[in-house]
Length: 287
Image 1 (cartoon, rainbow, N blue to C red):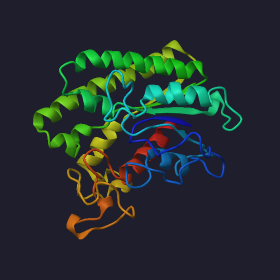
Image 2 (image 1 turned 90 degrees about the horizontal axis):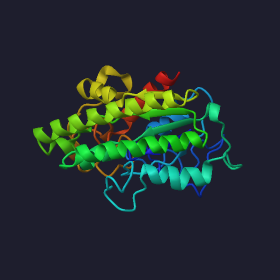
Image 3 (image 1 turned 60 degrees about the vertical axis):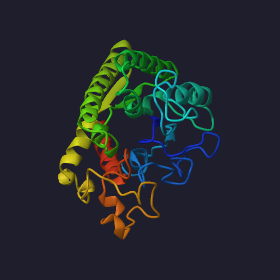
Image 4 (image 1 turned 180 degrees about the vertical axis):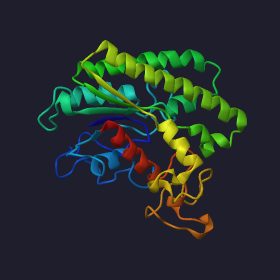
């Protein structure tokens, strides 16, 4: 599997270090890697817990990524956009199935979870309705590139309801409504991209995973899934936990409950339990 995206997916993989193998399916760094979820994220869980057969994953996702930094700027200029991940990392290093990481088109999944930062960085801008079509055009072009380099199986994950994150809630009801509208537009475009890809390339298989609905379900009723039932707070985060904790279930008395009983680790990122159920449901859909 090859994965592309942002902080919801990154594990801090360095393509110049240890590559994935049967004994070390994520390569580097040591499991679960450097995630934004205070524990494993969906890439970790899908690779090691919900795989029906051996799954080796090259995870090129990078925290803060947008589709194309020239169209929607990330929070720092050093962030690798999805365009960078594909054109500057995947194509020169992994296209053509190199000896150090051999892969075949028929049994390799290309998973893309992007858009959280595109929408988050643009929804409040007056020109967002002009920028989004340009971003989507680039998105399509990058998928064409992957296909031309041998990709045949695509998983698209849409944008979750980050309008319900503490970051947006703190900006007020108007911001929440505006971001929700832009997320809906983005997600409709992702569905169209997936459908169009399999139309243009009949030998391509595409899946769209609806993280938006899944996240809404858990935010409204954590016990909709056993994995997320421990959540006791789905609207706030505790500042003492926001940069990560020594253990996945660390408890600081000033936070009232352990870190893994908060849905939100910080203003934008969920804790690992949400990632666990995301991976579980992705695996269910793919099977």
